[in-house]
Image (cartoon, rainbow, N blue to C red; front, side, top):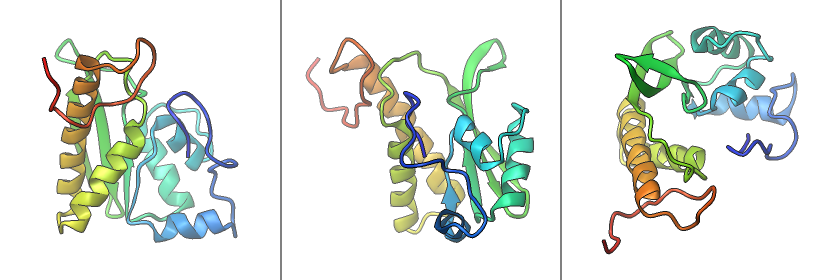
Length: 166
């Protein structure tokens, strides 16, 4: 799909009729687009409402689950800045996972890290909901550790290991 810095992997991720990409999306257990990617999958709706975007995605393609990641959206809950990811299923159930936003420029690789963490949970036999929640916890910690142990002074990667000398 795309990178946090704005790059697109391959050509457009839009699911064109008859395309191999559409067939692949329909076979997926879980799609994990960020908000800009979700808009593309939905056909570029003008709304910022993730529920409307999810509905448009389900009308175009048919993944079993859809996780619209909230890192690109700003939400205010109780006066604090939160990142809210929304997990949808075909039955229109919604499971929201909100965590305090960590102000860090060391977020390179968040999408790949989250989807990999979820895949690991699924491989262990966790439900999609539990694997997604655990993946979000892992990602939140990796962002926090990336801020605490930066490898560069500019935009940089997450930190996957808490084993650093203080």
